[in-house]
Image 1 (spheres, rainbow, N blue to C red):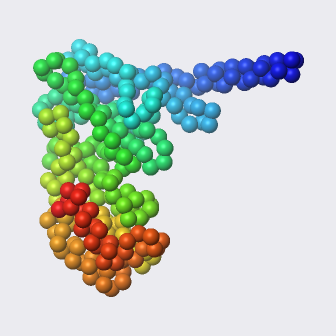
Image 2 (image 1 turned 90 degrees about the vertical axis):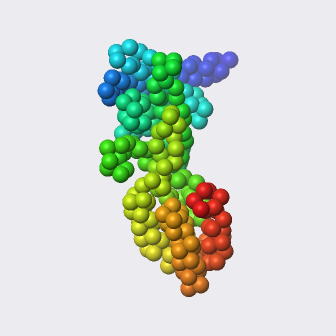
Length: 281
């Protein structure tokens, strides 16, 4: 009985020590952003778990317009249970930006589900004049994440990312080319507008082709070849790209290092079907 009591006491002391350590590490923090007459504040408790990983809890977003609070609620996403981590890259977890060009900046939350190669979640809050409040949309950007940038340097902001559907499609993640993807916010919805930015697509195609040529002799170029062909399809050059890959196949330069992925002519045929299925052709 005394041994059981000692074990219970030791367990209780350990739990109390862990709780005390967690409490000591937790701190109330707030991130703010503003543009024009719109301001936003993201408050949360920052701490760490027993492995030293950062934790974010009690996340609350508040949005004010012309000094009046129009939205305030806990941050929730069906992608996370119970709460998401906060994204720390590409502008941080909170940005207030003019995305629609209508003189009413949107509030963008960048969250992260955690785990290897996953997943950046964007929550975008736009003003709804009918309710004088804010409506929101959510998009999972997968591993590539996103950044708010002026892709065409024309004074308009977009969300620049990459097509995560190409991850692991023909190669391991490290050798998967992910073609550029540009989205615009229109009427409160994200619209794939990549074809409207041919200069950016051409630049990405050049990078994907360079990566393919550098890795093809090692049998690790198929993922980059697929991304290059996708970019070329967006530029209206799908037939030419597939014809070039056909020549590469006949020359024996479309090999797979693991001998499991389709290579040569089979790769070209499968890629043609995938580009059509994914909406590139």
